[in-house]
Amino acid sequence: MFSKSCEYGILATLYVAKRSDEGSKVGVKEIATETDIPAPFTAKILQQLAKSGVIDSYKGPTGGFHITASRINMVSLADIVEAIDGDRIFNGCGLGLSECNANKPCAVHDHFISIRNDLKKMLKNTTLRDLMIDIENGKTVLKR
Image (cartoon, rainbow, N blue to C red; front, side):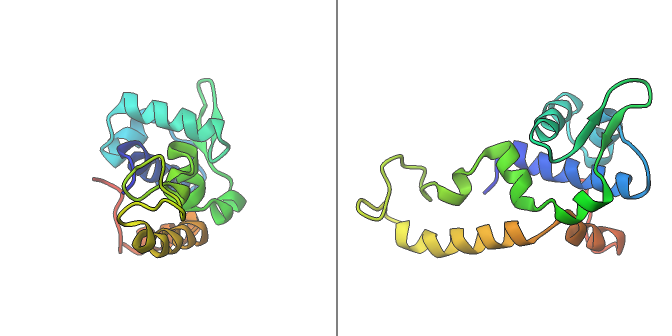
């Protein structure tokens, strides 16, 4: 459903949020190791997320990635998805056709609309904090 970059972006952002909640900035190598994402790919994704304002990036010897506590409560999964994959998942055709619309629908158009709307609602209503609660309680994991 999501691109591999987007999946990695969600995992990396959750790890950054977890470590930020503990009061730390975190580097690319640690994020890559703890989420089992290749380091060069992790660096590229983190820069996209920082550029879009999902996470903060600090340079230098004490640098790393961080998310403020208030933003952990506000950043939604939709913010991460849009930063990495754009809005195609919210507006695009279920089969990836460029000509699909209500007047010229693809074969799954009518079925996909409700699924897409439910997905959009879930992504917009789920914050990093919501997901971190399950991670902290050991109900979910971050490593692939």
